[in-house]
Length: 119
Image 1: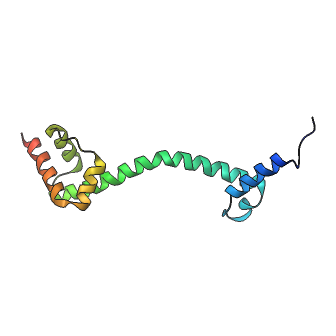
Image 2 (image 1 turned 90 degrees about the vertical axis):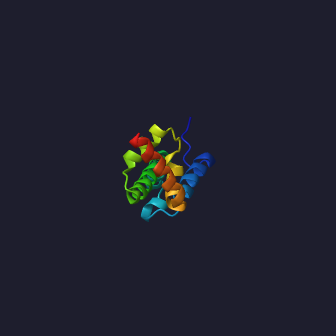
Image 3 (image 1 turned 180 degrees about the vertical axis):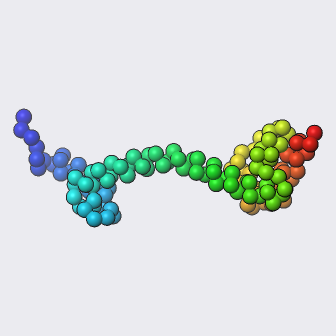
């Protein structure tokens, strides 16, 4: 069977790859061979980084909670320990939201954790 060099399927596939490479710098947006490598790598990065984004947000929440805790005179690890001993089930996303947007409520949560640590 002869090799299709300029068939419709082949052209469409190349067009699809070059369309995905639109906006890339240099030869990567116009040359099929380099565009194919760039697009493959970018799709791999996009897949990997969608998973990593969850960890990134968790790190940001922990940083925000820690900063708010220190203002209250307690460390992040002591706060989390106190909350678990007090039986308060609140996730880090909600804690970070309270720390930034509702300092009074966050102060109450910290007080609850501190009272659990004392007893």
